[in-house]
Length: 296
Ligand code: SAM
Image 1 (cartoon, protein in one colour):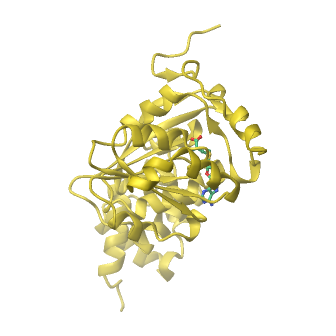
Image 2 (image 1 turned 180 degrees about the vertical axis):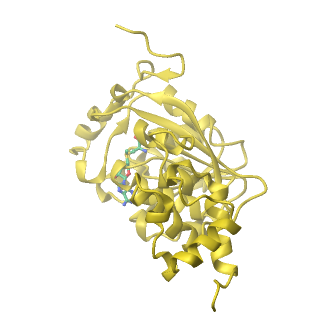
């Protein structure tokens, strides 16, 4: 059997029994909420270490049984933790009574999709980190939210399916490079920190995961515009097609207008979308906003 690479946390030491803890409270993990709890406290400490220096704050999505929350609090950061499952709230309140009383921890019982994350973050002490072992079924949506929030955070740190992290970190013209990569890279520099094997969770998921650190680009870039999103989605929606075909009819542009725009943006319409970098998408979408096509 091959040995795991050195950056792999296998989840062996310092295990907490999430199963026993759930049983103790008469609970079962809920698959519909993507509940795969971390078992290894040293692994949580390793993730918490990425969350930033003491004095700052962390907005945690999906507190679960509080394994990661405990590590972040242990580093002296203040935490706002969002959790939707009402059954877990009493567990968290009991476990973190002292931190709740001191104000170091605030629990928000809500569906993260309905929370104004920007307002929450703006009220927290800087430097701010958005973090979480994300429920897998919400990872796409939450990554899009993280892109919109890049201007209010110092960084985002997420535990995600390995395949998603590989997509975030992919280079142009490689198989994992796609719309998600371009959106994330439009505001962040993503970096895979380490792999977390499936055995580190209860219940054990069918795939491995990895921790990704998303550092906002410097100087900060504006969140992607609607036009940027249109050009990116169209380019990757028809992956094997040339940009000429993928972008045909985009923004109601005629073919001569599209040709003119592409020349101005220094993009060949004979290329395929996966060969374009973030700056190419940014240039053409900016030009489409400012330039009146010929004949208008
Ligand atoms: N942080 C814990 C850990 O690492 O062990 C739990 C992580 S578990 C992968 C994801 C957590 O997100 C679960 O506790 C789940 O109940 C919660 N969750 C799922 N959907 C949510 C939603 N829409 N809003 C807020 N929390 C959600």
